[in-house]
Image (cartoon, rainbow, N blue to C red; front, side, top):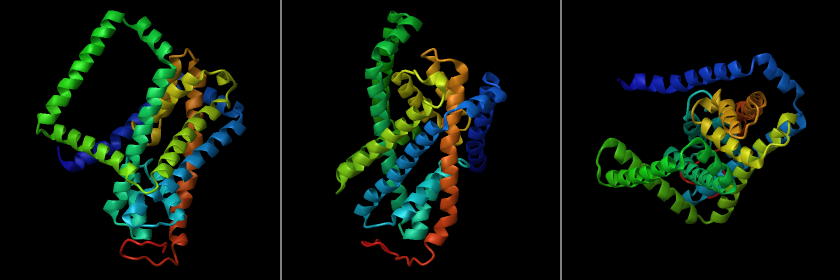
Length: 328
């Protein structure tokens, strides 16, 4: 298969999957019923959720400065904020193109070398991945009894134990194989793991590492707060357990990688998580659409304004070709 065909497939598959999942969600909850939920929702809670989302994005832009400082760059906060919003918007068109665009904005308006700018984005993704793993671990501890009972009811305990043991054996065999293998897939995995470890170590070598860690925690607290506060917009979800919120949030977060910006996949992921708690289908899917729509609106507005304002904001700025210690 030629590289150009692979490229088009990578672009088209998430879009087609998103279209299918939109159809699937509407087959579960008809559009007129979905619109009824939108009309009856308490928008005070929705706007509060959007505000939490806004704070997380602003914190992400501020945090980015900590990664660039050790490289000798002191960038404008305005450019950092607009680059972050522009990247989110572009990710709705081509998967992962936003990260490239984000680094390109700094190259264009702050004279940051593209490779270095992109490297900092990879480093912050490592930090985000670690926090996501921490949230999953905390959720497993909080909901241990529920998760244990769920698996015991669904699966035979003996079979479950054998399955877990089998997974552990496969894991250790896989690790040993990857260490000694020179195949393309093994090398990619090794490169990923090495990059992950280097990213973690680079965080602790930063001059303002605790400020960076504080912002990272704040970003994810705001993400969860956005999800949680929006749940109060629907009266059907007012008594939802916090464990359901955490599992729904984790499921929805992973769904964003499945399609462009979580189009179609986000509401289905929320519904799948909430169904574990016997929460009705209609309000679950409606809630997923409300969260996704409100946050998408925020990103489209912020991204659109950023793309328009970037040239204006930098109209009278003079760029330097080398890393700068002071703001240009």
